[in-house]
Amino acid sequence: MNKTASIILILAFVISLGIIFGGNFGDSGTRQNVEIKDGVQYVTVGAQGGYVPKVSIAQAGIPTKLIMETSETFDCSSSLVIKDLNYQNFLAPNTKTEIDIGAWEAGEKMQGLCSMGMYSFQIKFE
Amino acid sequence: MKKYIFYVSGTHCASCKILIEDILNKQDIVHNVQVDFKKELVNLETESELTPEELVIILNDLIKPNGYSLSVEKKVEIKEKQDVLWQALPIGLFVLILFFLLQKSDLLNFGLGGSITPITSLVVGLIASVSSCLAIVGGLVLSLSAKISQDDQSDTKTFLLFHIGRLGSFALLGGLLGILGSAIGINFIFTAILGILASVIMLLLGFNLIGILKTNKITLPAGVFNFFRKIEHRTLTPLIIGFGTFFLPCGFTQSMQVVALSSGSFMTGMLIMLFFALGTLPVLALLSFGSAFFAHSKYAPLFFKSAGVVVIGLGLFALLAGLAGLGIINPIFNI
Image 1 (cartoon, rainbow over the protein chains, first blue to last red):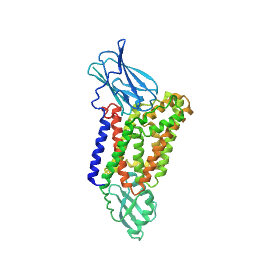
Image 2: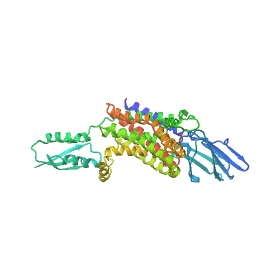
Image 3: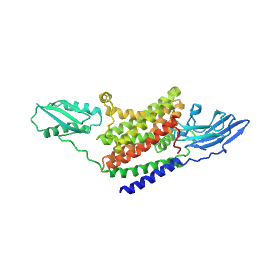
Image 4: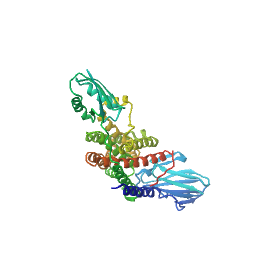
């Protein structure tokens, strides 16, 4: 293999890696998983092979609860870390876990991660 | 009494100095053997009438089994063709792309049914061994295996010990989790720090494999190595590393640990963790013994460099993800 061909291949591969990792930029988020019942806001996030949805948009200023839903989840997304709340917990494989995250101000963002750090999700408050 | 200075090659660590001195000082024909590790020289005295060339042949027979060789003249390091790296880079990157595409696909996410039996944990182990856990455990296995095959002739024994250590620790610690229950909590921070340590080792070994770190060799103080050598480090070290993989961060391992923990019985905990480790065995064994196979073939230089590229990629991924997991940096990846 000559050097030029190799450099072209390397560039192509680096760009593909960039696409694989950078696929989530510009995710504007969804409100579909957010509902308000009796003055409490519930944000539901699925955890299985990553978190769905990756970006949720919730209302600021109301008490909020995060519901983590696992379905036969054995991967990293089951060991959840929320730095802002000092929350670390292991979600059992088939459960709904309710986490009280309190009320947030507009413009704030809360981030959840799996303990190995390769899956994450965000809740933006507006 | 004559004094000779020979050149020595194959010394990659401070312990080599002690080992060579030990071996040669036991011989009657030479005295006062001193190894200058930095300059790669061996100073010795002899009363025999042999020519330096003949002496080198005799001494080489003694230290060759340990991977060192003496020469009268300085060996000019054969400059590997730069071409190899140019071939290795695309190969390594291609492997990385395949690996991350597999993570992004939904192939690894399928249901396993309700309760966990040893058989389900075997399947979880199989999935884990090709999942993102491979970035840490597999990357570590690949980098260590390639490095060991590069340095050492007797790699099969080392690999066997590693895998035995891994299986043994999973069975034993799984059983302990079963009876002791939450008495031994699995600490997120502890595993995260271990993961970061593992990824740093991977990066160092990766650069070493592609030949960038060759000049500044990684050395530990001779005292540390001396200690390990006394307790036969060739046997114990791979066992300990295998044992340590129980604590490496891997979501699948952690979920199985929780199952073992909540089982409340030594047998169940042991079986769950043992079968999980057995599930990961085919891929990990393929990585270590595959490395040995390539390392002893004519493709060895290409293999070492490609493996180096893969290991650096996985190491970087694991390091950045680990730092994000600890909250030190913002998550960069979201696969």
